[in-house]
Length: 405
Image (cartoon, rainbow, N blue to C red; front, side, top):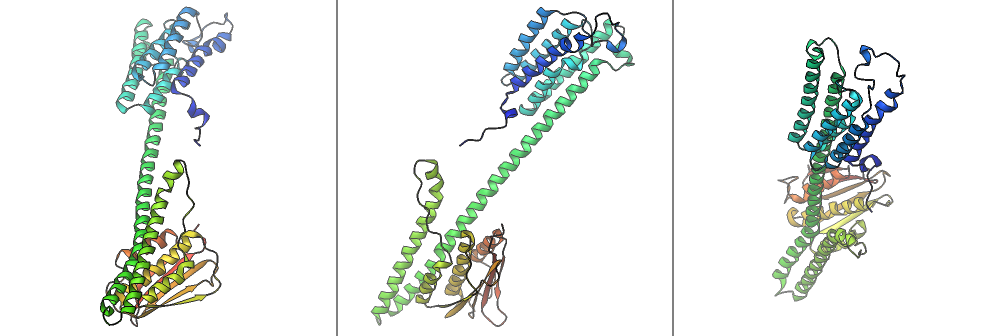
């Protein structure tokens, strides 16, 4: 279900410009036109009080302004020029030969703000230059007609206030543009990071799913080759283990591909049932397969096993699986010990040790341990893998029960 944007964002730029024009037209009539006609006009009232009402010109200017509002998105510079012309005509229709007051410029300011926020920089600069040029040109023309008010600079006139309004509108539009570009940059960066994280997660799952089974297959195949002539029954058992490991690996790959395709299926017509996710409940199956491959796994539980979040349960299983796989492939040991400590209610502590010597020279190397370290870091846990002082290798991890939430 699509989420509707806020009400103010659903209003088009043309509608905002047309609304601002209506305000600029209504202001002299409703506010300034309500003053007594017999009040004398002072110098402070110059350009503010209406001197006459040319409704024909005001109507034509309004039609031009509405046309400009309709063209604002497609032809921003043309729309800005039409709005400026309509503003000058509307000002002359109310007060002849006066400066452009700030109250006559809301539509121009709104249009300039929106053009600056949404259009290319070259277009926004051209629109700003057009508005400022007309303001200065109009003020210079009036100064020549009215005795050099602009040239002397002794009075801050209405056009100076209008220039300030235009500058503020341009700055607001520029700030809106920068905020949008910053949000787009952050969005693109977040999307790229999400894609990278998902690729790393898939790579870890692929490694954890395949490496253990391939290690068992390699060991069982070597054992079968050595005893196929003297002990056919042992060779037959080894081939059965190879077949079981291969089937398990294929099933894991199918589950992973199904999870990757689930989003497309949910976007389409049919949603499949969730697949089984590995966890500590599969530890017996893991130890049986490893023992059959020639490495005995001694599992010790400490404390009552708490209910774990799926990602914590999966991470704990993967840590044990990868560590046992490394013992199979690199340690040269005949056994290893797995300790799972659940006595602390806030975390699960896992420790896998062996007394082999095959991988003690390169602690922490390889994709497997690096993947485990990344997996534990994502869950805000602690991970350590290094050779033991008295020989062998040790992998230890602490996972928060709540997953670092």
